Length: 180
Image 1: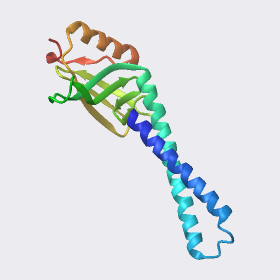
Image 2: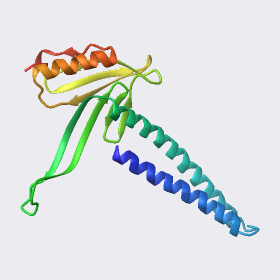
Image 3: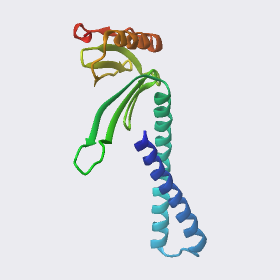
Image 4: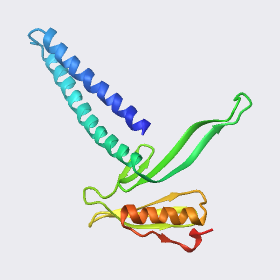
């Protein structure tokens, strides 16, 4: 989610810069009789509008990412890269890839996969020995995502399956190798 926030900040800054530059150019540009000045102003306005459009899309994505993060069903850390060298006093996490699964979708770092919105529905959930598979989509297009997960004991697996059933209405299929 940090990456989404960072991108939105950059797009907001570009939008503000484009608007400010365009206004200053109009205010101090004089009569703007030169064709080059008019082309430059048009380019600045177009770039500002494009940045604003991308910023609005980013805000929508950030809103959905927050909704997913605030309503988790399952939270998995798929990779942690640590510095174990002699210079490091203690092992420190330098990179952490998180996956948050919610009724509203899946948040994979900065990628958002939405469910139960805009006609996209969860069709099936399968829990295997080391993965969870989601089949989702619209009437015309169906997709599948398979998330690797750490080993979970039977009680925790039943709890997760019940939470999926309660939150989504879909009863997960526990594959034979899904239980320890």
